[in-house]
Image (cartoon, rainbow, N blue to C red; front, side):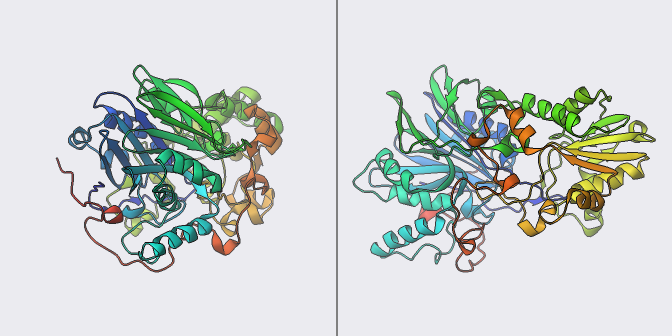
Length: 511
């Protein structure tokens, strides 16, 4: 059974749409009735990976209940709601959409009935053979006399829904058996947590592009996108789930099986921006890597200046490293509004024109008359950096030298990050000096790809660097078969109120 709240509208405050985070997934198997709250806190720790919608599925061993809505984790769930979600097994998801629109129907976890019970699934990543999977689902639905996928209204249009449908469509197999049948046929990036009525599963694509880790509770297990989520719920880190591995957790403990040979290509941009600084990837602290990148950037791109300031928060570790490597004092020259995010209030055009100042404001007494090194993690369209440079000059900065702790982003990601299109990526069509002119800086330098990779201590051939060098480790389909809205074949009517997943129950969970 699937339940949901009404669909509410949440809009981003003004400012540049930069690299949008991959989704966050979390799963827990533990005796007792606290799994929904554990999942809530796990998702809270992963909120940076997706702010469009949030959901939790819980099982008591007989039934799965899914509660999800648009908005932040703290907006979707409250104490009373979590108290109603009883069970010993749960999965959760914080979404940023990379396939399928940002609508209630595409919120996760997805849900399907199976021949032996129920299935709920949450996905971080992006599949690349989506049209092949959609064709198979359509054939199955046609054989059952159902309206084909893509011609239905009020239902999901995401690669996650396709994957859920395929795993659920094996009447002769358990969920585990069906997953082992289907996962070898899936291409692209996927870190999954899913569940049937009694068992928690975790799976990672053969390239391991998106992170997925395993943790141990005193009486249970946790699967999560990042180690920081393990820390929040008091779980100890056990290991990363391996590329091409499926783990299953139930009352008998943990078991592991490989569905594909590992060919590791972990996402380099996780180190740059996506992951929390207090997360560990491939045995290395993300914070430490970012500081080291800053040190290397100082050696590669020195400049005479009075202060090093970060663009908070993601630019802060690299700015610390740049200050250490250059000997130039570090200072906080920009103040970030920690509460800027999603809001119920539509900004007026007047407010919209304030732009970046809603998120960042300069400390005039720190920067006036100073030659500044401004350190940020990346440049996508260039709008944010242009606004920051202008704002710093208006506050009295004498010089503004921009240093970026990643190479130029020249290529879009098809594995779970919603970058701009190539035409919108400022570095795709301009030289470094042309970008410098565009943003109005006195100088501009990026870290080299080689130095960034060396700072991670992961070998180049085990990393996906496609957004920087255009080399995609998983084959891509024809351009017309790829994109965020590729499954939205027909226009779907706007619906109000409550929508149930796959015709399931549409009851409300109210306090």
